[in-house]
Structure formats: C-alpha cells, structure tokens
Image 1 (cartoon, rainbow over the protein chains, first blue to last red):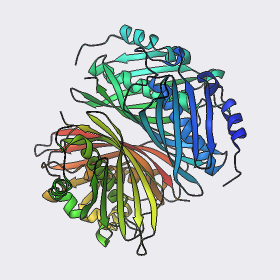
Image 2: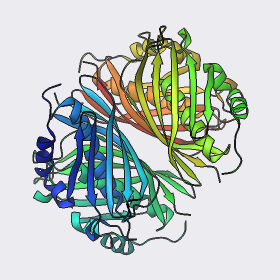
Image 3: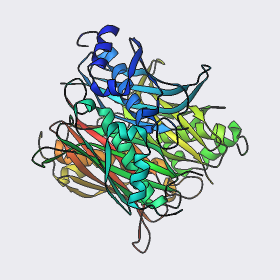
Image 4: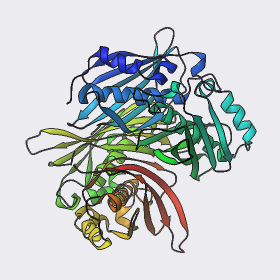
Length: 138
Length: 138
Length: 138
Length: 138
C-alpha cells in the first residue's frame, strides 16, 4: 500500500470532485475495508416517475467502490470496471451506498456495494447491488 | 413492442428527468436499435484531477442503454443491470454515449454502449464501454 | 414463489445436467437463500499453467448463482446475466462456490457468489467474486 | 506489446489447457484484434432441458475474450473480469464465440464477445453477449 488515507483526507478528495458537490454526497464511514457514501434525495436527482434516477445509484456505487478500494490501496486508485444490478425503484429520503473490500492484493481490490434507500422512519430497502475491481494507478 | 417512441417523445422523457437536466444531457440520435446521448463537459462534471467524473460516464451509459432498449421495446422499460469497463480518463469537450441494441426478444434487449470523448478538433477517443439488459416493465 | 425445492431435488437437477457431470460438481449446501457447489480439482480442469481454468470458475459461479436464486424463486429459473472479477490464480484441492441471495422480489433475485479455493490443509483463499440476477421463467 | 502470437501458437496454448480439451474447443479465427472459438454441441455439454449449459457459454466467452486480448497484448495476459448477459437458450449444432478488441492501451484491452449458436442449416442466432477487460500480467 502507498500511504494510508485518513477519513479527513477522503472527505477532502470527495469535496474536490465538482460532480460529487453537484450531487451533494457525503462520506458517512471511511475505515479500513469499508466506505459508506450518503446522498440526500431531492427533486434534482429524480427520474421522470419520481424515483431516484438510476444514474445517481450507479454514480454512488462507482464512487463508493473506489473509496472502499482506497482504504486498502491508498489514494492513487481508479475503478477498473464495475457492474450493477437493479432490483427496485429508488424511493425514500436518503441513499446509502455501502461498499466493502471483499479481498485485495497489493495492486487490486475486489469490492462490493449495497445500495440501500432509507425512508423517513429509518426503514431500509436494498434497491441495487454493485461489484467491481479497483486498481492501483501505476 | 408496446408502442413505438418518436425521437420527440424520447426527448420529452429525457427532459422530464430532473437529474438529466442537472447533468444537461441531450439526445443526439434516437432511431430503431440506436440511441446516442451527449453531455457537454463543464467544470461541474469533473473529478478531483480535472477529468470527467466516472459517475458521469456510468450515468450516461445507463441512460443511453435504456433509451436504446426503448427504441425496440417501447416506453415502459427499465435497466435490469449493466457493467462498465473504464479504459482511459475522460478528457475532451464532449461525451458521446453511443448505444445500440445487439439483439432483443419481445421482453428484453441486450444493449451495448461505447463511451467516446470528443475534443475541440473533433478527434474521438473511446474511454469506456458498457453492456446491459433492458427489460419491459410488466 | 412457485414450489419450494428440496436439497434432494436440487441434487437431482444438478445430476440431470450432463455438463455438470462432466465437470463433476456436487451440491454441498442448499437451504433458503444459500447454495454451495463444490468441484474437486483434477488435471482435466486446469489451464496451461497448472491452475484451475477460469472457465471452471465462471461455470461454477453461474451455476451456484442459479441454484441460490432457485432456493427462493423455485425450480423454473434462469440466469439473466452475471459478472465475475478474478483476483488470483485458482490453486488448491477443492473449489467451493458459495452463493447467497442478497435480496429478491417475487420474480427476480440478486445473488452473489464467493469463489474460494481450499488447499490440502483446509486453508481457504478467495480467488474470484461474482454477482448476478436470477429470473423466474415466465 | 510483448511478442506477437501466431495462430499456430494460440492453438498450442489452447491445446495445453486440459479443460479446453475436455470441452473440445478449437480456434477458428486468430488475427490482430479478433479471436473466434468454436465448440461442437454434444450431449456432454448440455443442461437438464437439452440446451447448451450456460457454463459452456460463460467458459467460451471468458476464453475467447482472453484470446482476443492476447492478439494485441501478447501471450502473458489474464482476464481481469467479465460480464455476460444471456438472451436465449443455446440450441443448435455449434457454438461460435466471436470476440474482438474494442480498444486497448499498452497494458489493458477492453474486449467484447458475441455468443452465436449455429444450427444444422448454418442459420445463426445470438444467444448471449459478453464484455470484459484483459490485462497484461506484470
């Protein structure tokens, strides 16, 4: 591993991503092997039927997978690729993208991400699932 | 197929997606078996190193795949799942997400999408590739 | 759900697949939400460098995902699609493909599968990870 | 690129894979940017309903993607990961796994594979589609 990233540094990286500021995402958890990103649902993020846009789910999955990989590989990482399976429409008050490192080598981490919608009462529903490989930038 | 969608109706659907308005995407091509979405690069869409955010690429792939599926399955479709492989950082003036239907049955379409960055001189570079299944909503 | 499948019936289905007999796979676990398939490593299943062939891993992932989906959706299911990420060469005495249902609706199940190699001393190593959607056949 | 591979060398590599001999696959095309593997359908390769087993399709996709990547990256490559979408049951006399390199850098190739069943009259049907990343072994 290059150098370890602190939660504070991870928050700075996220804040240095203009697109993440546009979506308004925040890091809720950042610890070895695990990263959780949260997005508050607002009108700007919906699709034509009033659900959270699938693109917000895929953006959050992509970013959460990368941050999870970063907890074990350091700051110089990129998403090599990922897949996402949608199960239900995204309805609720908050999107929680919960990623963890399944296993890693010195140069790569296979990560998974559960995409969970939380409603006003705190009830949770898994709406999509992602998996991908994060690689150290050479 | 349920009912055929016109390019005008497809543009209305896209415009009815608040998140697509936030990203500012437009339909460049919408014809049987093919849909192209375009996003002009601007500061709001970048990541921390000045490249187009991977989440914009995955959003555009997701949406272009769905619209391509819609050209053969009709308007009541959703993305069942998709995968994306990143090859290069997204640099350029314009993102062109070019999706086509590889093959379809009455209820499902397997679609692919090439994610191409176009620079100021019109030179093109493939930066990512996606593939997914679009399903008719029952 | 159509009808529930017993572990005995699942073993019969597997045995009714000539290709699964060719590979010589067996069901180690089959219970609600979970299915584990095992393949003993033998010369016939290797690639040119003496590791378990990647195709055996993808076959086992595909089949374990489908059986896991079958534990909640019944016997009339098929794999809609899946993705697999390879992390290490497959070396060891036994391949254990451990699949579980992450979440399901009446018609679809999102499943994940950990591909673990077990050596002669019982030590385990995750070598690949898969994820996919299993669908009820209409 | 390391060294270029000839079609003869590629055939030797395939023949040096015991599992590929068990399945009885042959290289039909091997040229820069493109590789086609063929598998004759026989009873041993079926699933319980008499169709080609999905695991044969995923094995063939995996291997064809790797060989396609090898045409541009050389012999020391491995599949980093891939996804496959199934569209129809595999019925016919021959499976043709047609892979091509969509784009490559010095170290990675994004490849796609069309899985086509050919019947006794030579009629073709696409039954599945795959996409993946092939990486140079460091």
